[in-house]
Length: 256
Ligand SMILES: [Cu+2]
Image (cartoon, rainbow, N blue to C red; front, side, top):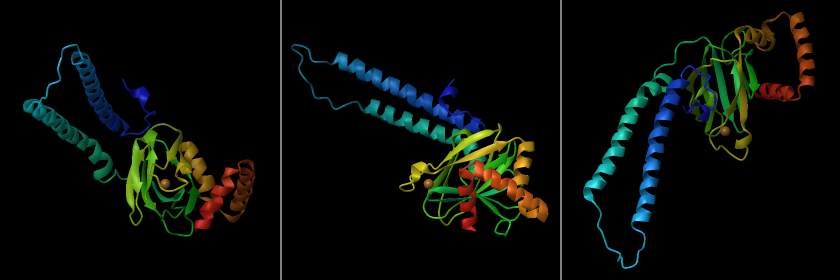
C-alpha cells in the first residue's frame, strides 16, 4: 500500500527492508494519530470555562506504567522481527559470487575498481572508474568497501543498500539487482564540504550488454596489440563525444 512512497525496489532483498519500513511506518503513524487526537480532545475538554478553577494533579501511576511498557514491548518485538532481514543482508556471509568490485570512497568520489582480465586485485591490469559502476542484472555482486580518508556511506536507494565506508577497514557487502537501469549512488554520510556533490551511478546491464561493456572497458589489456590500438582510438572518439568520460579515466589512472 505504501509502495508509491519509496523509490522503486530493484533488489532481491529490498522486499524484506520495505516490509520492516512499512511496519514501523504504520506503528509510528497510528501512534501519532492517537497522540494528536488525545491532545485535541483534551484541549477542548479542559479549556478555560467561567467558574472552573485550575487543579493540581500528580498523574496516574498505572497509566504511566502502561505507556512505558507497551512501547518497550513494541521495540523488543521489532528487534526480533528485523533479525531475519538483517542477518540475511548484513550478518551472514554473502551468497558466493565470482563478481567482486572494490569500492574506495574518498572526498568526494567513488573509486570503483575491477580486477581486470587476471581476476586479481592489486595487479597492473586493474581498472578503476570514477563515480560509475557497471554490473550485470540478476547477478550477486560483492562490494569490498573501503575509505581513503573519512567515513562515507555507500547508499543505493533502489537496492535498499546502505553501508558506511570506514577508514582502515574493508567491509564486504553484496547486492543483486533485478532490473536493468541507471541508479544513483549518493554518499549518505556528511563527509566534508563537497559531500552533496559526492555521487556516482550504478549501471545495471542485461548480460549481453554487460559482456559488451566489459569487453570494451575491462579486457583491453588482454586484447592483442592491434585490437587494443583500435579500441583506444574508438575510446578516444567516445571520450571526445562525452566530456565526462576523460575526467573519469584520468581519475582512475592518476590513482594507480
Ligand atoms: Cu562522502
